Amino acid sequence: MVYLLFMLSVMLVVGFISFSSKPSPVYGGLGLIVSGGLGCGIVVYYGGSFLGLMVFLVYLGGMLVVFGYTTAMATEEYPEAWGSNMVIMMAMIIGVLMELVVVVLLVGGFGGNYVCDFVGSIDWSIYSIEDLNLVREDYVGASSLYNYGSWMMIMAGWALFVSVFIVIEITRGR
Amino acid sequence: MNPIIFITILLTLILGTVITMISSNWLMAWMGLEINMFAIIPLIIKQHNPRSIEAATKYFLTQATASMILLLAALMNFMYSGQWTIMNFTNSMPPFLALMALTMKLGMAPFHFWVPEVTQGSHLTSAAILLTWQKLAPLSILYQIFPSINHNLLLYSGILSIILGGWGGLNQTQLRKILAYSSIAHMGWMAIIISYEPSLMLLNLIIYILMTLSSFMLLIGNSNTSTASLAIMSNKTPLTMIMLMGVLLSLGGLPPLSGFMPKWLIIQEMTKNNSIILPLIMAMLALLNLYFYMRLIYSSALTMFPSNNNMKMKWKYTNLSYSTLLPTMFTLSMLSLPLTPMMNLLL
Image 1: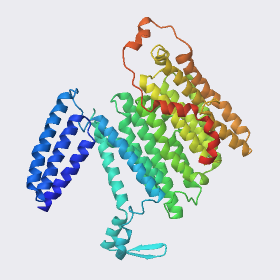
Image 2: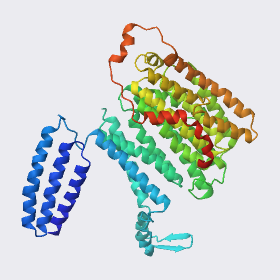
Image 3: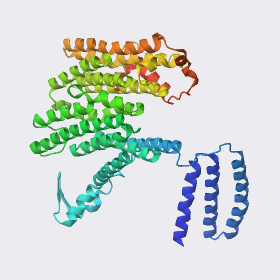
Image 4: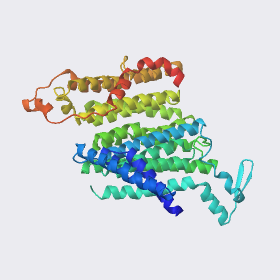
């Protein structure tokens, strides 16, 4: 049952994200209704069955009326969904801006060192004297090398993926 | 192109440049350059036609050769010094090879022939990326290794770039080729100043990127690719032509505009270093660039060529769509000369 609560919570958050990033008001109403229903489910899970049912019937009934009204008033014949160019472009721009903010925080030293905080956890496979680090030569040492260079391994994997991906994108001829 | 694929490719392009910028290891810097090169290729062939595929092939072959030479330089440096750090060279051969690879990547003088061809073959937006964003990664490496580089070679390459960038654009009628030659000339200015004052190189790069982006935005708004299409634009959007005139004069480096700022500071810095003849030659060769900018201005804003009446009715066909950033870029690329006294604080 804990998994049920977990899934309800995740879907609630996804619903909130979906209606806060709505490309057109129709889908905003849809996301609000979905997340509202899930919130009622969470209330029911915690024992407030009457409250959850009432909120689901009354509040979401009202919301459905509003949703129908919104749909009727929407002048867009083909409303934009989340996969449209504008939404993806704005998501990219905002993502890059967020990344800039994180980099500024890290460089400015406001955020502490939460990126490379995992270094101390594998001291048992690395022997270090001042500046010199030695790695064991057996499989434990090899796995610790992969652990230390995990970011580089991710980058190398991405580079290989990109090369294949771009070859396919070019040669499909569209 | 599918928008999701497009976004992935664009993010990978940014990722490659950023990896090259932030890495202190030759192998990671090389990997960033390779990712960057891979990601720009589908952007060049966004429209599948033989010309753009030819351009992408030329770009790929040149950049792959340059990357191999750069990797060779890194490996030789590792062989001599036993470390992968970018900044420490112990022998004179690896920085020589690295300089050769970077001039090839930047499209500077002895290896500049691919720039106009590739730029002409790609779409206007891809050409804008090619001439602005693609300069960042090689220049960041050059910025890190310039103390070890043979300065005479850098000066020769730079002055050759200025000569050939001014000279090659003289007979061109295609706008992308003209902007490519202007890029070669600006790269020459940056290469010359980097051994005297590297922060001026950054300033020149920023101003050059602003001016090139705003001129490309103006051209993209009307899909102009040739001087002839610029000549009949004046009865469609007269204001655009006046803006283009300003941006081109700024690219040429005329005093009240912001393109004058890097040229002024570079010449001042070089005369402070008792180098008198070289800045004189550079300033005179910049006139070659100014000549072909002036020819573009003449055909777009200062005259009206004889044409038939159908051509004059071009205004009624398509809607214009300019980029949202255009006013900002235009203002920055024309009117930032009064900020020059602040450069002491910034640089």
